[in-house]
Length: 370
Image (cartoon, rainbow, N blue to C red; front, side, top):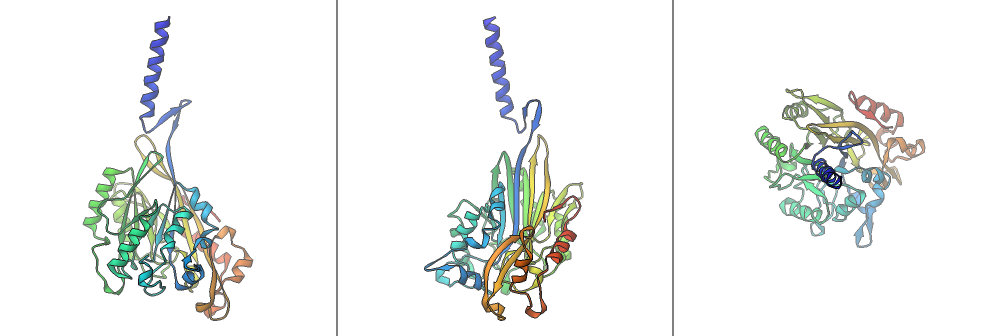
């Protein structure tokens, strides 16, 4: 009897070890999946007024800008943002539009807010030249974040909760007719090779696309063409940036039936821009679910965001202050009445208008949290 008990114990131990090595484990005869929660927001566009307000003696503190949204960024396993402006170093002079240079302290602010992936591949990447780009890479590399899209030799991969996620980044254009091999453009052969490699080293492929035309409310044919091409290649998620406006979020089906979640543009996360339609942005949230032989994108939700600031005078451009990001569901009529663009060139912030706009942009099986 004693020998039988020992044998049974050994068999049980072996069985437990076998289950632990699998992607899927059994618990009370139920399947347990690997799940990664993901958040993505749009352009962190730092104009000169945002730099001036953040100045605290000899340093800069941007944390108040993100305090309202920080809990939701922190809550996700992985959070993504597009850093629209380069961190080129104090020696090159901090500046806003049209040639941007954001203080180094921004990297720490994004890290403290909870961001894990920061896209640097955009039309402003060379605003301060190759040396400015080098400084930005070095600054972000001081923190436990992936700064993607610039001078990459290897495809960035994050492993979380048993799921490997790779990140690709492509940029449609640079400013001032600049050229650089430091960023990847929309070359279909390059993209096809990159996606193939990414699939060989990860479970999920997420692509950052800096594309489209500024201030457009709808995606351009170029965006739709490449969204379809990436879906054909089996990419899982596309995060679009650059237009500064919130554009449609929908599923795009590829040739083989694969469905890709596409956010054509998540708009601005924060900025000092004065146009009415750029004050509405979005946070895209979803779960990546890994089962034994499949990956799915589930629980997709658009949370509309409001870029808020006030103005001291009718000269809005030079008197903006109080920059903050709000969820639209937390944005009150009192706050909307205080928005700095109200009355500027006939522009006004309307909560109802923003709600209707957000609803119209969410495709089938995409929730809107507002």
